[in-house]
Image (spheres, each protein chain N blue to C red):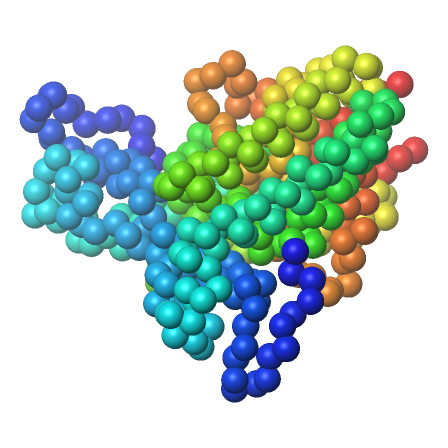
Length: 201
Length: 201
Protein backbone atom coordinates (compact mmCIF):
# COMPACT_ATOMS: atom_id res chain seq x y z
CA UNK A 1 0.00 0.00 0.00
CA UNK A 2 2.60 2.67 0.91
CA UNK A 3 4.25 2.64 -2.49
CA UNK A 4 5.12 6.18 -3.55
CA UNK A 5 5.62 8.90 -0.95
CA UNK A 6 3.98 12.25 -1.54
CA UNK A 7 6.20 15.17 -2.55
CA UNK A 8 7.21 16.62 0.79
CA UNK A 9 9.48 19.65 1.12
CA UNK A 10 11.36 19.82 4.40
CA UNK A 11 9.75 22.25 6.83
CA UNK A 12 6.56 22.36 4.82
CA UNK A 13 4.92 19.03 5.39
CA UNK A 14 2.54 18.15 2.58
CA UNK A 15 1.40 14.68 3.55
CA UNK A 16 -0.71 12.29 1.59
CA UNK A 17 -2.82 9.67 3.34
CA UNK A 18 -0.08 7.00 3.05
CA UNK A 19 2.54 9.16 4.77
CA UNK A 20 0.08 10.06 7.52
CA UNK A 21 -0.67 6.35 7.92
CA UNK A 22 3.00 5.32 8.14
CA UNK A 23 3.71 7.90 10.84
CA UNK A 24 0.50 7.07 12.70
CA UNK A 25 1.40 3.36 12.78
CA UNK A 26 4.82 4.22 14.15
CA UNK A 27 3.24 6.35 16.89
CA UNK A 28 0.67 3.63 17.69
CA UNK A 29 3.49 1.08 18.02
CA UNK A 30 5.53 3.32 20.31
CA UNK A 31 2.79 4.60 22.60
CA UNK A 32 0.06 2.00 22.17
CA UNK A 33 -3.10 2.65 20.17
CA UNK A 34 -5.27 3.41 23.21
CA UNK A 35 -2.80 5.97 24.57
CA UNK A 36 -2.46 7.80 21.23
CA UNK A 37 -4.76 10.82 20.77
CA UNK A 38 -5.31 12.75 17.54
CA UNK A 39 -3.41 15.54 19.34
CA UNK A 40 -0.33 13.30 19.81
CA UNK A 41 -0.60 12.24 16.15
CA UNK A 42 -0.78 15.88 15.01
CA UNK A 43 2.29 16.68 17.12
CA UNK A 44 4.26 13.81 15.55
CA UNK A 45 3.18 14.83 12.07
CA UNK A 46 3.94 18.48 12.73
CA UNK A 47 0.52 19.49 11.44
CA UNK A 48 -2.71 20.63 13.03
CA UNK A 49 -5.47 18.29 14.11
CA UNK A 50 -7.76 19.74 11.44
CA UNK A 51 -5.11 18.96 8.81
CA UNK A 52 -5.21 15.28 9.88
CA UNK A 53 -8.98 15.26 9.54
CA UNK A 54 -8.40 16.34 5.94
CA UNK A 55 -6.78 12.91 5.36
CA UNK A 56 -8.83 10.61 7.61
CA UNK A 57 -12.04 11.11 9.58
CA UNK A 58 -10.78 9.49 12.81
CA UNK A 59 -8.06 7.63 14.67
CA UNK A 60 -10.11 4.47 14.17
CA UNK A 61 -9.95 4.92 10.39
CA UNK A 62 -6.16 5.10 10.55
CA UNK A 63 -6.14 1.93 12.61
CA UNK A 64 -8.48 0.20 10.16
CA UNK A 65 -6.36 1.21 7.14
CA UNK A 66 -3.21 -0.03 8.89
CA UNK A 67 -4.70 -3.36 9.94
CA UNK A 68 -6.20 -3.89 6.47
CA UNK A 69 -2.71 -3.51 5.04
CA UNK A 70 -1.26 -6.11 7.41
CA UNK A 71 -4.16 -8.55 7.05
CA UNK A 72 -4.55 -8.04 3.30
CA UNK A 73 -0.91 -9.06 2.87
CA UNK A 74 -1.37 -12.21 4.91
CA UNK A 75 -4.70 -13.18 3.36
CA UNK A 76 -3.43 -12.77 -0.19
CA UNK A 77 -0.79 -15.45 0.53
CA UNK A 78 -3.52 -18.06 0.82
CA UNK A 79 -4.92 -17.13 -2.60
CA UNK A 80 -1.66 -17.76 -4.44
CA UNK A 81 -1.15 -21.00 -6.43
CA UNK A 82 1.70 -22.08 -4.11
CA UNK A 83 -0.77 -22.20 -1.22
CA UNK A 84 -3.50 -23.94 -3.16
CA UNK A 85 -1.96 -26.86 -5.01
CA UNK A 86 0.71 -29.43 -4.35
CA UNK A 87 1.62 -31.58 -1.36
CA UNK A 88 0.51 -30.14 1.98
CA UNK A 89 4.07 -29.79 3.31
CA UNK A 90 5.11 -27.82 0.21
CA UNK A 91 2.05 -25.59 0.58
CA UNK A 92 2.85 -25.13 4.27
CA UNK A 93 6.43 -24.19 3.46
CA UNK A 94 5.20 -21.72 0.83
CA UNK A 95 2.75 -20.10 3.26
CA UNK A 96 5.31 -19.83 6.09
CA UNK A 97 7.93 -18.37 3.76
CA UNK A 98 5.46 -15.80 2.41
CA UNK A 99 4.28 -15.00 5.93
CA UNK A 100 7.84 -14.07 6.89
CA UNK A 101 8.08 -11.99 3.71
CA UNK A 102 4.85 -10.06 4.42
CA UNK A 103 5.85 -9.58 8.05
CA UNK A 104 9.20 -8.07 7.07
CA UNK A 105 7.84 -6.02 4.16
CA UNK A 106 4.99 -4.59 6.24
CA UNK A 107 6.83 -4.73 9.56
CA UNK A 108 5.22 -1.79 11.43
CA UNK A 109 1.74 -2.80 10.21
CA UNK A 110 2.09 -6.42 11.29
CA UNK A 111 3.66 -5.27 14.58
CA UNK A 112 0.54 -3.20 15.22
CA UNK A 113 -1.66 -6.19 14.39
CA UNK A 114 0.26 -8.50 16.75
CA UNK A 115 0.03 -6.06 19.65
CA UNK A 116 -3.72 -5.45 19.46
CA UNK A 117 -5.59 -5.67 22.74
CA UNK A 118 -9.07 -6.02 21.22
CA UNK A 119 -10.63 -3.07 23.02
CA UNK A 120 -12.64 -1.77 20.04
CA UNK A 121 -14.77 -3.27 17.25
CA UNK A 122 -12.09 -2.45 14.69
CA UNK A 123 -9.52 -4.37 16.75
CA UNK A 124 -11.87 -7.29 17.35
CA UNK A 125 -12.65 -7.54 13.61
CA UNK A 126 -8.93 -7.57 12.85
CA UNK A 127 -8.26 -10.24 15.48
CA UNK A 128 -11.04 -12.31 13.95
CA UNK A 129 -9.43 -12.07 10.50
CA UNK A 130 -6.06 -12.94 12.02
CA UNK A 131 -7.55 -16.00 13.72
CA UNK A 132 -9.06 -17.08 10.38
CA UNK A 133 -5.60 -16.86 8.80
CA UNK A 134 -4.06 -18.82 11.68
CA UNK A 135 -6.75 -21.49 11.27
CA UNK A 136 -5.90 -21.90 7.59
CA UNK A 137 -2.25 -22.44 8.50
CA UNK A 138 -3.23 -24.84 11.28
CA UNK A 139 -5.30 -26.80 8.75
CA UNK A 140 -2.26 -27.04 6.45
CA UNK A 141 -0.15 -28.33 9.35
CA UNK A 142 -2.75 -31.00 10.10
CA UNK A 143 -2.95 -31.91 6.41
CA UNK A 144 0.84 -32.26 6.14
CA UNK A 145 0.82 -34.42 9.25
CA UNK A 146 -1.99 -36.65 7.89
CA UNK A 147 -0.06 -36.90 4.63
CA UNK A 148 2.86 -38.36 6.60
CA UNK A 149 5.35 -35.62 5.80
CA UNK A 150 5.32 -34.06 9.28
CA UNK A 151 6.16 -35.91 12.47
CA UNK A 152 3.24 -37.51 14.30
CA UNK A 153 4.48 -37.21 17.88
CA UNK A 154 3.54 -33.56 18.40
CA UNK A 155 -0.01 -32.22 18.64
CA UNK A 156 -0.66 -30.06 15.54
CA UNK A 157 -2.05 -27.34 17.84
CA UNK A 158 1.28 -27.17 19.65
CA UNK A 159 3.09 -27.08 16.30
CA UNK A 160 0.89 -24.20 15.15
CA UNK A 161 1.44 -22.22 18.35
CA UNK A 162 5.21 -22.71 18.34
CA UNK A 163 5.56 -21.90 14.62
CA UNK A 164 3.59 -18.68 14.99
CA UNK A 165 5.58 -17.89 18.13
CA UNK A 166 8.79 -18.20 16.16
CA UNK A 167 7.59 -16.19 13.17
CA UNK A 168 5.71 -13.47 15.05
CA UNK A 169 8.70 -12.81 17.32
CA UNK A 170 10.56 -11.53 14.25
CA UNK A 171 8.78 -8.17 14.60
CA UNK A 172 10.53 -7.72 17.95
CA UNK A 173 14.09 -7.85 16.67
CA UNK A 174 14.37 -7.78 12.87
CA UNK A 175 16.05 -4.66 11.48
CA UNK A 176 15.37 -4.17 7.76
CA UNK A 177 18.39 -3.13 5.73
CA UNK A 178 20.89 -5.11 7.84
CA UNK A 179 23.05 -8.02 6.72
CA UNK A 180 20.24 -10.53 7.25
CA UNK A 181 18.06 -10.25 4.12
CA UNK A 182 14.35 -11.10 4.24
CA UNK A 183 15.02 -14.06 1.92
CA UNK A 184 17.78 -15.52 4.14
CA UNK A 185 15.62 -14.96 7.22
CA UNK A 186 12.75 -16.87 5.58
CA UNK A 187 15.19 -19.65 4.58
CA UNK A 188 16.48 -19.85 8.17
CA UNK A 189 12.97 -20.06 9.64
CA UNK A 190 11.98 -22.80 7.18
CA UNK A 191 15.23 -24.74 7.70
CA UNK A 192 14.96 -24.70 11.50
CA UNK A 193 11.23 -25.45 11.52
CA UNK A 194 11.41 -28.40 9.12
CA UNK A 195 14.92 -29.79 9.57
CA UNK A 196 16.01 -28.55 12.99
CA UNK A 197 19.28 -27.17 14.28
CA UNK A 198 21.23 -30.41 14.52
CA UNK A 199 24.02 -30.72 11.99
CA UNK A 200 22.92 -33.06 9.21
CA UNK A 201 25.06 -36.18 9.02
CA UNK B 1 8.92 -18.39 45.84
CA UNK B 2 5.11 -18.49 46.21
CA UNK B 3 5.05 -21.86 47.93
CA UNK B 4 2.52 -21.84 50.75
CA UNK B 5 -0.44 -19.49 50.68
CA UNK B 6 -1.29 -17.63 53.84
CA UNK B 7 -4.37 -18.67 55.76
CA UNK B 8 -7.07 -16.58 54.15
CA UNK B 9 -10.68 -16.76 55.26
CA UNK B 10 -13.20 -15.69 52.64
CA UNK B 11 -14.41 -12.15 53.14
CA UNK B 12 -11.63 -11.40 55.59
CA UNK B 13 -8.54 -11.17 53.47
CA UNK B 14 -5.41 -11.82 55.50
CA UNK B 15 -2.67 -11.64 52.92
CA UNK B 16 0.99 -12.41 53.33
CA UNK B 17 3.56 -10.79 51.07
CA UNK B 18 3.51 -13.72 48.61
CA UNK B 19 -0.22 -13.53 48.06
CA UNK B 20 -0.02 -9.76 47.59
CA UNK B 21 2.77 -10.32 45.09
CA UNK B 22 0.86 -12.94 43.07
CA UNK B 23 -2.18 -10.70 42.75
CA UNK B 24 -0.03 -7.65 41.98
CA UNK B 25 1.74 -9.51 39.15
CA UNK B 26 -1.60 -10.52 37.71
CA UNK B 27 -2.80 -6.90 37.80
CA UNK B 28 0.48 -5.64 36.27
CA UNK B 29 0.10 -8.17 33.44
CA UNK B 30 -3.50 -7.20 32.76
CA UNK B 31 -3.20 -3.40 32.97
CA UNK B 32 0.50 -2.82 32.39
CA UNK B 33 2.89 -1.87 35.19
CA UNK B 34 2.89 1.86 34.35
CA UNK B 35 -0.90 2.05 34.36
CA UNK B 36 -1.26 0.25 37.72
CA UNK B 37 -1.50 2.51 40.78
CA UNK B 38 -1.35 1.40 44.41
CA UNK B 39 -5.04 2.36 44.46
CA UNK B 40 -5.84 -0.14 41.66
CA UNK B 41 -3.79 -2.79 43.49
CA UNK B 42 -5.66 -2.13 46.74
CA UNK B 43 -8.96 -2.45 44.88
CA UNK B 44 -7.93 -5.80 43.38
CA UNK B 45 -6.73 -7.06 46.75
CA UNK B 46 -9.86 -5.82 48.48
CA UNK B 47 -7.76 -4.10 51.14
CA UNK B 48 -6.82 -0.51 51.88
CA UNK B 49 -3.74 1.18 50.47
CA UNK B 50 -2.25 1.42 53.96
CA UNK B 51 -2.70 -2.36 54.34
CA UNK B 52 -0.59 -2.88 51.20
CA UNK B 53 2.12 -0.65 52.63
CA UNK B 54 2.18 -3.03 55.60
CA UNK B 55 3.50 -5.70 53.17
CA UNK B 56 5.67 -3.69 50.78
CA UNK B 57 6.92 -0.10 50.82
CA UNK B 58 6.06 0.67 47.18
CA UNK B 59 4.81 -0.53 43.80
CA UNK B 60 8.46 -0.66 42.70
CA UNK B 61 9.26 -3.14 45.47
CA UNK B 62 6.50 -5.43 44.26
CA UNK B 63 7.89 -5.20 40.73
CA UNK B 64 11.41 -5.91 41.97
CA UNK B 65 10.28 -8.96 43.99
CA UNK B 66 8.36 -10.28 40.98
CA UNK B 67 11.22 -9.79 38.52
CA UNK B 68 13.72 -11.32 40.98
CA UNK B 69 11.54 -14.41 41.07
CA UNK B 70 11.49 -14.70 37.26
CA UNK B 71 15.18 -13.90 36.81
CA UNK B 72 16.34 -15.97 39.79
CA UNK B 73 14.64 -19.00 38.24
CA UNK B 74 16.35 -18.46 34.90
CA UNK B 75 19.76 -17.65 36.37
CA UNK B 76 19.77 -20.72 38.60
CA UNK B 77 19.49 -22.91 35.49
CA UNK B 78 22.96 -21.85 34.43
CA UNK B 79 24.42 -22.89 37.79
CA UNK B 80 23.20 -26.47 37.55
CA UNK B 81 25.60 -29.27 36.55
CA UNK B 82 23.63 -29.99 33.37
CA UNK B 83 24.46 -26.48 32.14
CA UNK B 84 28.08 -26.61 33.15
CA UNK B 85 29.55 -29.87 31.96
CA UNK B 86 29.21 -32.09 28.93
CA UNK B 87 29.01 -31.44 25.21
CA UNK B 88 27.76 -27.98 24.29
CA UNK B 89 24.67 -29.29 22.49
CA UNK B 90 23.66 -31.35 25.53
CA UNK B 91 24.17 -28.31 27.76
CA UNK B 92 22.13 -26.21 25.35
CA UNK B 93 19.33 -28.76 25.35
CA UNK B 94 19.40 -28.84 29.16
CA UNK B 95 19.21 -25.05 29.40
CA UNK B 96 16.38 -24.75 26.86
CA UNK B 97 14.39 -27.50 28.55
CA UNK B 98 14.83 -25.88 31.98
CA UNK B 99 13.97 -22.47 30.54
CA UNK B 100 10.63 -23.83 29.35
CA UNK B 101 10.13 -25.38 32.82
CA UNK B 102 10.84 -22.10 34.66
CA UNK B 103 8.68 -20.16 32.23
CA UNK B 104 5.72 -22.47 32.82
CA UNK B 105 6.24 -22.81 36.58
CA UNK B 106 6.59 -19.04 37.05
CA UNK B 107 4.34 -18.08 34.15
CA UNK B 108 2.93 -14.72 35.38
CA UNK B 109 6.35 -13.63 36.64
CA UNK B 110 8.14 -14.41 33.37
CA UNK B 111 5.25 -12.84 31.43
CA UNK B 112 5.82 -9.63 33.41
CA UNK B 113 9.55 -9.81 32.66
CA UNK B 114 8.99 -10.30 28.93
CA UNK B 115 6.61 -7.34 28.69
CA UNK B 116 8.85 -4.80 30.44
CA UNK B 117 9.21 -1.47 28.71
CA UNK B 118 12.31 -0.33 30.60
CA UNK B 119 10.87 2.94 31.89
CA UNK B 120 12.35 2.72 35.42
CA UNK B 121 15.70 1.71 36.96
CA UNK B 122 14.15 -1.47 38.35
CA UNK B 123 12.98 -2.43 34.85
CA UNK B 124 16.31 -1.53 33.26
CA UNK B 125 18.22 -3.62 35.84
CA UNK B 126 15.93 -6.55 35.14
CA UNK B 127 16.35 -6.17 31.37
CA UNK B 128 20.12 -6.13 31.90
CA UNK B 129 19.97 -9.41 33.85
CA UNK B 130 17.74 -10.89 31.16
CA UNK B 131 20.22 -9.86 28.46
CA UNK B 132 23.02 -11.49 30.46
CA UNK B 133 21.03 -14.74 30.56
CA UNK B 134 20.33 -14.50 26.81
CA UNK B 135 24.05 -13.96 26.18
CA UNK B 136 24.94 -17.13 28.08
CA UNK B 137 22.49 -19.09 25.94
CA UNK B 138 23.84 -17.45 22.78
CA UNK B 139 27.36 -18.49 23.85
CA UNK B 140 26.18 -22.08 24.24
CA UNK B 141 24.64 -21.98 20.77
CA UNK B 142 27.93 -20.74 19.32
CA UNK B 143 29.86 -23.40 21.25
CA UNK B 144 27.57 -26.17 19.97
CA UNK B 145 28.04 -24.85 16.46
CA UNK B 146 31.83 -24.70 16.79
CA UNK B 147 31.73 -28.24 18.18
CA UNK B 148 30.05 -29.34 14.94
CA UNK B 149 26.81 -30.53 16.52
CA UNK B 150 24.68 -27.65 15.21
CA UNK B 151 24.29 -26.72 11.58
CA UNK B 152 26.74 -24.15 10.22
CA UNK B 153 24.54 -22.46 7.63
CA UNK B 154 22.62 -20.20 10.03
CA UNK B 155 24.08 -17.24 11.90
CA UNK B 156 24.11 -18.11 15.63
CA UNK B 157 22.54 -14.72 16.36
CA UNK B 158 19.56 -15.63 14.18
CA UNK B 159 19.33 -19.02 15.89
CA UNK B 160 19.34 -17.32 19.31
CA UNK B 161 16.62 -14.85 18.31
CA UNK B 162 14.39 -17.50 16.78
CA UNK B 163 14.81 -19.92 19.70
CA UNK B 164 13.94 -17.25 22.24
CA UNK B 165 11.05 -16.17 20.01
CA UNK B 166 9.69 -19.70 20.09
CA UNK B 167 10.17 -20.20 23.83
CA UNK B 168 9.06 -16.76 24.99
CA UNK B 169 5.85 -16.97 22.94
CA UNK B 170 4.74 -19.78 25.25
CA UNK B 171 3.64 -17.19 27.84
CA UNK B 172 1.07 -15.93 25.34
CA UNK B 173 -0.86 -19.17 24.96
CA UNK B 174 0.12 -21.87 27.45
CA UNK B 175 -2.62 -22.79 29.93
CA UNK B 176 -1.26 -24.66 32.97
CA UNK B 177 -3.37 -27.62 34.04
CA UNK B 178 -4.46 -28.55 30.50
CA UNK B 179 -3.66 -31.74 28.61
CA UNK B 180 -0.27 -30.45 27.48
CA UNK B 181 2.03 -31.01 30.47
CA UNK B 182 5.09 -28.80 31.02
CA UNK B 183 7.33 -31.84 30.38
CA UNK B 184 5.69 -32.68 27.04
CA UNK B 185 5.79 -29.00 26.04
CA UNK B 186 9.54 -28.89 26.79
CA UNK B 187 10.02 -32.15 24.81
CA UNK B 188 8.11 -30.67 21.86
CA UNK B 189 10.16 -27.46 21.86
CA UNK B 190 13.43 -29.42 21.99
CA UNK B 191 12.31 -31.89 19.29
CA UNK B 192 11.24 -29.17 16.86
CA UNK B 193 14.28 -26.97 17.56
CA UNK B 194 16.87 -29.73 17.15
CA UNK B 195 15.23 -32.21 14.77
CA UNK B 196 12.57 -30.20 12.96
CA UNK B 197 9.02 -31.00 11.96
CA UNK B 198 9.72 -33.26 9.01
CA UNK B 199 8.84 -36.89 9.59
CA UNK B 200 12.04 -38.83 10.23
CA UNK B 201 12.69 -41.44 7.58
